[in-house]
Amino acid sequence: MTGRASALFTCAVGIAGIANIAGAGEQSAAYRASGADARLFDQYDNDGYSMAVVALEGAIELHVRVSDAPLESTAPFPTGLRRETALPPAPDRDAFAARLAQGSRTTAEAVRRVLVGVAAEIRYDPDRLRNQDPAAVFSSKRAYCVGFSELAVDLLRRLSIRARTVQGVLRANPGADRYDPQIEGVYHRWIEVFYPDRGFVFSDPAGSVNGVDARYLPFDRRSLRRPGALRLEGLEPPAGALAYDTVRAGKTTVRIRR
Image 1 (tube, helix red, strand yellow):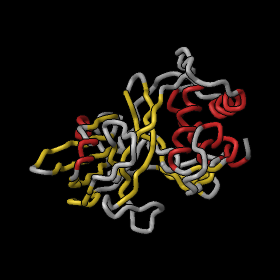
Image 2 (cartoon, one colour):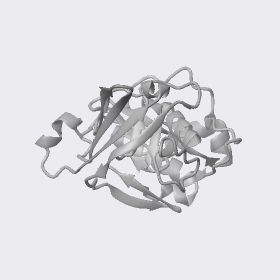
Image 3 (tube, helix red, strand yellow):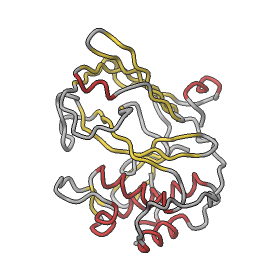
Image 4 (cartoon, helix red, strand yellow):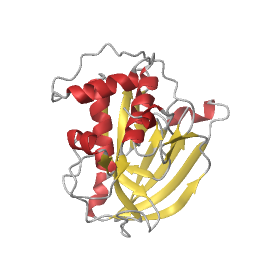
C-alpha cells in the first residue's frame, strides 16, 4: 500500500425516521422516466436513501429523498461471519484488505478504511476496453466506475463484510464522461454495504462513503445489456444540503457521511 492509501479520504436512520433527528440535513429531487427500460426502476429504500415511484400514463415519476443523518451502526469488526467460499484465491488482495482494515473496531470503520484505500490507490481511466474485474483493476490501478465498484466489493467480501454492486443512473452535466442526453446523465455503477444493525447503505467507491446524493437513481434489477429505451428528465432539481465531511486522498475529494 502506498502512502496515499493511508490518507483519510472523503463518494443513520431510514428515511422514515428523518423527522425524528434534530439537525439532520435532507436533499430531494424528482425525475420523469419513460420508455420500455423505465421498468428497471422500482421503489428503493435503504439507510439514508429512498426513491418512491409514481406510475403515470406512459411514464413514471421518481421522487428521491436523501438524509445525512449519522450512520447509527455499532456492528463489530471482525464481523464473525464465515467468508464467502465463492471468492477466488487472491493472497495479494487478501493482504491488502487486511492491512486497510487493521485496527478497526466496527464494521463501519472497516468499510471506511477499505473505501479510502480503493480511492487512494485506483486512478479513474475512461478506457472501456480495459478489463474491470478485481484482479485486473488491482494490478493496473486503473478503472472506471465498474472497476472501482467490483474491486471494493471484492475487498469487503474478503473481510466477511456483505456488499454488492448497484446499477443505475447518475445525473450529470453534459461534459461528464459517457454523458447520454437521453438520460441527462451517465449509466453508473456503485455499491451497497450491509450493516447487520442498519441494513444496506449506499457508497460510491469513486466518490463517497456511506452515502450518496439525490442524483443517484438505482435500478431495482440487473440489466444484462446497456438500457437503450430509457428517457429521463428532471422535474425538480436537487434541493437541500447534505453535510457530508470531505477529505482529500491523492487528487480526489470524497464525501463521508458521519
